[in-house]
Length: 159
Image 1 (cartoon, rainbow, N blue to C red):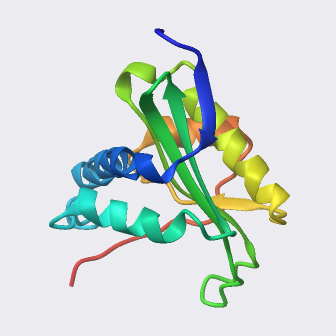
Image 2 (image 1 turned 30 degrees about the vertical axis):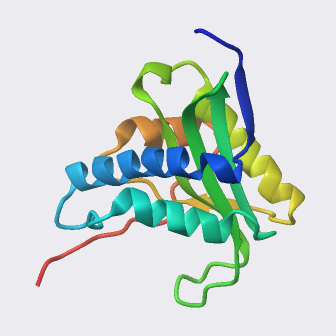
């Protein structure tokens, strides 16, 4: 590796690069199941717009994994209100996690998840939930190693 890994909050000037990483996550999900996961027409620009709205909100955690000036991953989480439809009490949610291929299996994802969970805990979350694609067995194994347990299974049917 060319520089020490740093996990830190994303800066506003990094949002285009974070959005480009998010677009990779979108495309991965679409590749898993194109009928379930859509790809917005301007996915990178859309994520940049979304993160620009989210980055200053106190309930949001947007972190990057950086080696020098190169972003190699990111994680996005936030505090969520009680959801009666899901019977889910107020909690922290890890919505996005991405690590570039060349950085996988080196602890980057674990460091990002631990940092998001810690930040959400510091904001008052007593639990953190996440969704993971059924086909993403590597991510499921990672999350299980980090202490997450299965609680729901989404099933989809086209009409």
